[in-house]
Amino acid sequence: MGGVGAMKVVGIVPSPSSVSIVLIDNGSGKPEAKYKDEWDVGEDRLAGYGMIRSRLIEKLSQWMPDAVVITAFEPFSLRAGRANSSWFQTAEVRGMLSEAARSVVPDTEQVQKAAITRTIGKSKAEKYRTDDGFWNAQFGPGFPKKYRDAALLVFTRIPRT
Image (tube, rainbow, N blue to C red; front, side, top):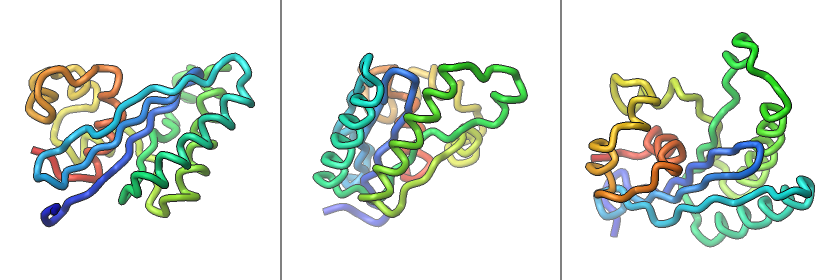
């Protein structure tokens, strides 16, 4: 049985061509990555969106997480002049994921990188992403680097060691 503060949280990071997703459960007192995967959008984007939406709804219905956190739009990308077609494709994926997640889990939110710094510690999100010692302390050796961004989102919501 989970202790005080026990939560299951799903972290989702969209990109133009795929979605990274992790389910972290801290019910045993230490965060455990119960699921991690990457889902491809595919060449037929509309069919891919439908497949990912259905898959996400199915997984969330099975897992019944307490919350879902999704990487938010970062307004600085517009000021930095980095908006291009892949930026818009990511926005489409993010919107589809947000709608699908909220249809199952009312506590669904989009989280900006600044929230990671505020809730985890004094370092910037990028530093945590590359700090192998941090990840070894959380999950033991071998947590794949490609899921670190999604896990960082989860750590804005659940206690960690």
